[in-house]
View: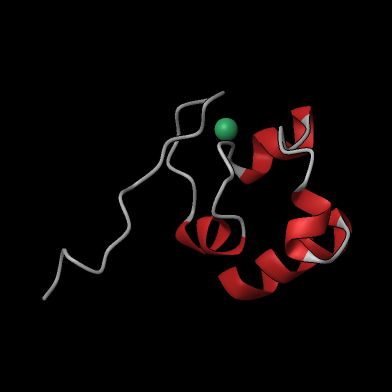
Length: 67
Ligand SMILES: [Zn+2]
């Protein structure tokens, strides 16, 4: 079973580091990791609409998921 359900690891388009799975789940279209999105913007004009919350709220959510 393992493998078929796993998402393909996605690398950040800016720094090349793997994007955390929880970020991809929350933002399936994201191409940037959290750090690069914070530094350079999400690169997604529709992100705010897609996640239904502002970015600061979203970041707090991500921190909660990680801890
Ligand atoms: Zn990055």
